[in-house]
Image (cartoon, rainbow, N blue to C red; front, side):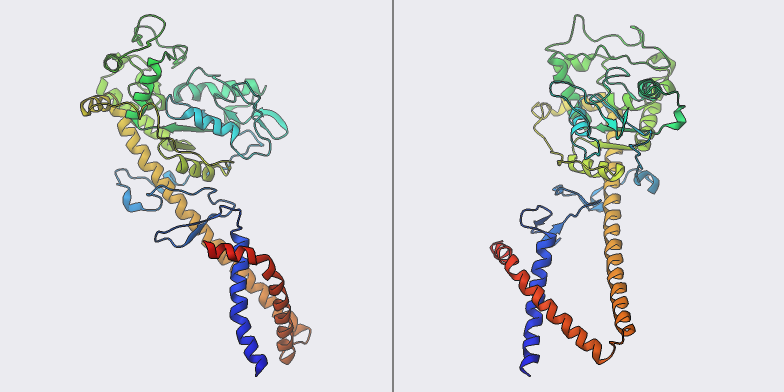
Length: 439
């Protein structure tokens, strides 16, 4: 009777100790894989290795489809983005860097912050890094910080798609046809008003980008096709009204222009079609190219950008992205009337950004749902594997003739072994247990 009573007492104690040991294994004291929450999602949320995130996601619209206003009809093919990026083969990642979209920060992440078998070699004092494939002196990344401006300063989609294959074959000393390589284009977009103000401040400080080639259909634009907005070396100190009043200012609708196929509208020849028709064709082309790119991120959603990049390419960043909202553009105070004027000058960019934002957030939600499904499947498979092992163990006991009473004795022996193991673990969990109590 006393032995039965002791066994009944032991079961809850063992269960509590087992939970403490398990929690210590899943969420060690010096780890950030578990964090406490006070919302409806529960006491803590865990991100584990593999496809899970390595950072907390503080943004409120994380998993709430109802918060996204649906304006565009995206198919599952539009949302499902996964690239089997073969860094050991001939695959090339091409970063289309649009001015003032956070591209410099993202470009540095690509060369300095990705976990790679052979990390990029970035020498102190040098702007470019060497990003070679494992065991081969060939670059897997085409970007400002790896290959430099090999296709021209801030080359756009029209320039890159015709230039990158030629440049990469020359660099790698290959004559492989284009079809032998996979070029995965990526880019960053930004809220058009913030981007426009940021570019104005940059130009005001002396930036010109006048060495950009603007190649289209094999030639650069003529002076008549693309007149400059200023006389002299640069536009230093330009007031915002003057910046907005230049009709040939490439800051206007820059994101659409740099993502569209300019050959569809006669490049920079404005007389080839009406302004309305030109805008319609450019916007449709930019949307199509953006949708079919391997990946794009949004400056306003740094953590989600990191998550989607990792899910898309199967690569992992070492450090979490940081959301910085205190930019020069954010410090510029403008009236509502000026804002409307900027939005009007960037009407195509405004439409493209709304399209991109909805597509981005829907891709994020789609991937989160897929991740949750993968987690449930993994847990179910683990549970089935344990059940199979248990059945195999019992079958082996019967095969050895330990069935019936013998099996009960074997279970009692196992129980005694479990008691010993649990008592041995008590010492190692005392400190952690007191830590949990303090929490």
